[in-house]
Image (cartoon, rainbow, N blue to C red; front, side, top):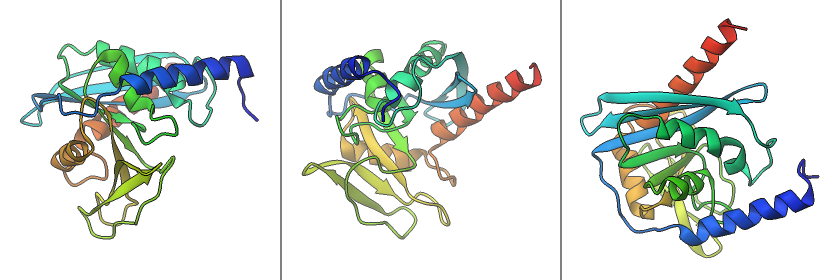
Length: 219
């Protein structure tokens, strides 16, 4: 049973369809300023952390934004719970990203409109979705570190399942906006430096949790 009333849910689904219709899967990005954004939660607060790295891998800026969640968690509608805070955190960065890693799905979503696509279209930024689970689609399990297997949904390749680190479950890589499926994988491999997650995602996760800890200490 959905936690939303049927009228609101229909409106949100329609927004996702419009987002999906605007997604571009052509390479229109650069690696000059690569960012990541991730969310943490504290009761009904969404805490979004964002970082941006230069092409040399050095941190160039970081930002965060905390706000009350607009809706409860509903599978398939994560964009409307986490998206507003993520967008505000990215907009607060002093260095404009030329590519953004988002902790969430991209086109590997039942309506081709996961969080990475939502954020990418709203901000008109190239985005890559990095998720820890498969929301939809079929794949063969990669076994060797660095190995990637296609993720297929509705007869279309919507991403890759990548074994990024020994001893860890694979991660799911998908384009969000303004990047192709293959380039999303290539950039993820390029920015994965010994950890399970690509560096922009890992540092954004740390930033979101740093803000969360700070909030907890002031309660």
